[in-house]
Length: 108
Image 1 (cartoon, one colour):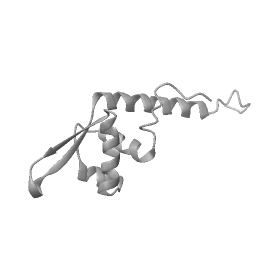
Image 2 (tube, rainbow, N blue to C red):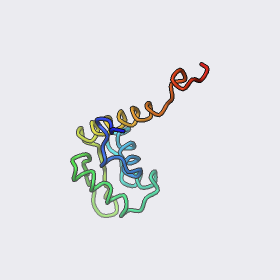
Image 3 (cartoon, one colour):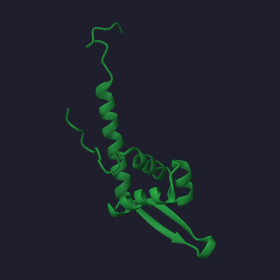
């Protein structure tokens, strides 16, 4: 079976896919929100965010100082396009797995 166009190996791992899906739903997301939503440690989330940022899929912004410092993460236009392409590729794969009742000899 061929992999559909748009399938993105970088986004596909479950943790990264969940992260990108959360980022796709917001303009900016706080690191603490992402950490709690994905149930990850600081270091595990940081690694995933760094991977996305290095690929140009995410942008990281740090605001404030001291105890009020917060880290924000945003999906870049490139990351959003990659996510949308990946979702379309997954939908295409799932569509292939849905049997056509007429082809399988099943009643409609």
